[in-house]
Image (cartoon, rainbow, N blue to C red; front, side, top):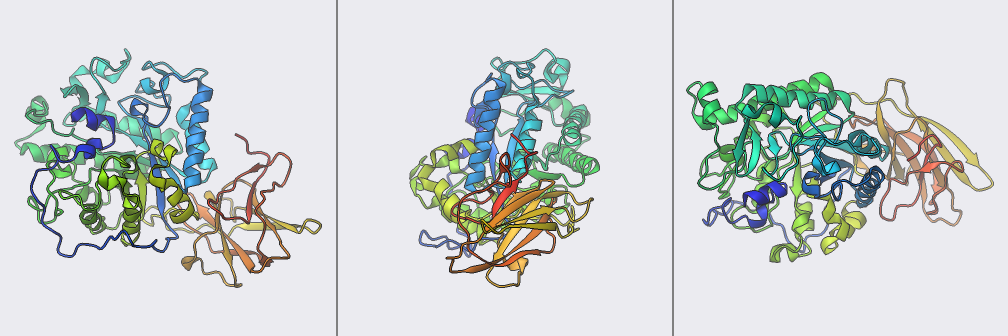
Length: 558
């Protein structure tokens, strides 16, 4: 079971009945939410975080295998990125530090074995994978969240490739063997300082939108085996209860990371993706109506609610990988619990697309879409993250089609975080050109002020000259470019007349007031046209949206 935990992000949920959950029938919630197979799609929100995890450990998602040539690694990532963009995602959560190693040139840790096949060996021909991935993701107007595992150091003792310069060779006294995996000792003060230094280097040198940790703090318990931290407890415990001391160790590193991230880059977000159960109600009246055999608070020593209450983290992504109706930890019980315990921070739900067809519940083609509808009906839930990207390749149960053609068939804006930034960018500048012969208008957009740092532009389409962007979905999203533009092709036979408006979206996802582009114009045709023979086009819409068309100038290239 412990091996399975290490292979997948909280993949213990595949066999959740033991040891994670006891065989006790849970008490029913007082007012269980209605999540019916017959429920229709909910109104689509203007703001919604939509992301997929990209796991590098054991080559789960990317790269597909160790030691691929550089060109193959790049091509695979671009294909993955384009697939997720087509589905409707606006962010990726990419694992860049799976086991005290790196998918980037690090002064502290060696190149990952899952990149080149040998830990410490650089890619050939040489490139910086992290820089490449960030640039490609940002070209598409998407956020890049850098996912790091805080405490895992050697994935499989005796099997993993270990470089002579790996931190386990330099400081063997920092590490503990538990279940065949080598972990940093969270109670060691030098370890805490080291983890903060490693993450500081990433935040300082790379244009990441967020730093993301998963659920692996203290490791999941192995039945009959205690985590061997007697030495550090004797040295640093100061008479505290051991469980409280362990929680204080994790609290300390989370607080230091939170402070450091905002010191280095104020706009960089800090998110945590915990196991689905904070604590059972049998242990704490604030806990959930669940019977989890292991929990964040009591077993992983991760006090998520404390971090949310104190504002140490900006978002939380509980891994709700259980089906609706699961008797020990029902999705329809955990979803409202997390909705009520986000304490003003953003909450996205981790959804288990990888579980498709794993049992009768997950053979139900409505399972995932009902979960998505339910979270959209939860006022304090702002989106979803799917584990993991590879599962999308086979369109399990038609869910990718459902997302692309129904739930995500328009571009959602990423929810802003006003505690990070509440300043709206300036209204964008617009220069219109009109080709009378072809009945095509081209609108070129640029920043309204030199100081604006933009993610891109949102386009709106209205049947009236008024545009209340607070109550409208964006029609299309165009990633930022020094001169970005789009075409409006008039169709004289069109029935409906539309007015178009544009807003600027800042790097912190704040939106400017709108500016009118044109109006009225009849609906346009679906062909994509460039402003020049070498122009790079980016159609940021998905599904069946047609006009306007995004245009990128020749300076942009792959």
